[in-house]
Image (cartoon, rainbow, N blue to C red; front, top):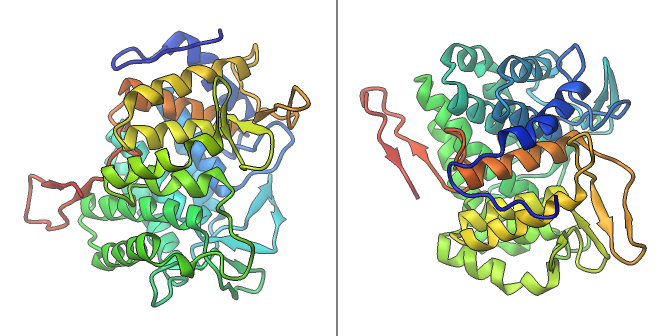
Length: 358
């Protein structure tokens, strides 16, 4: 299928069922979801895949995925950068945005399932994870991207990583509010992080070459709800020609001839957040040419060599395909998670749980 044009209420259940099954087939008995059979697992992409399972109605498999995280969480609330089964694959660092993403995944699961008992079960995991993440926030608002193997902070920040954490703080707050376990400091941290992302560019990429050539630095502040809609749309328009290959997808890096499926899916979410529904539908329609017969999707396409590259079909790419399809069709109650900002009132006395949108 060369084009798949999605609209509200028309989730292609039968077409995407093999994509859900692909993630299921890769999931280990323990609940771990590696990149692909025989590959490693990192906490962020594990959650992305788990959200794909949730959208596909595989709630028990998603629960197993989150329980795998719970079972591997370190005492300080973090996870290592990657795992292979029971073994730590990368003991050299623990990344703050990887750790925070569990809150996004669990809030997504709750929105779809309504399972408050499971949310309560996972609450200590979220609480410890966010405590770790916020221990890395500076007085300027940004959050250091990682700690090394000894637990010492790597003192620099990433726009993409901090944008992802910004959304995770929203989700973590909503979990706390739902469970009547208020953490007002999380909203303060989110506000300070947002100020840094919007107004303090000098606090990012201080010790390495700027990451501005990466598409995620371009659209992630939009996907995460850091910018008001008008500014979000202007940001996407400002570099559209640099990153977009018409009919193919979004480049991963401006100076490399490579479009990637997952980044393109996340751009779809950013377009919806910016109110550009028509372009979101169009961009998503390009991606079916990168689908394999088993319902999985190749990582990307190298335009100069005219080849699929790398030779991988990751579970997290399948997860991103499902997240974008859900957002376009509003198939599940979590469909707007990455397209809008929603802050629950944390006052336990307010039974209506008034929703505040910023």
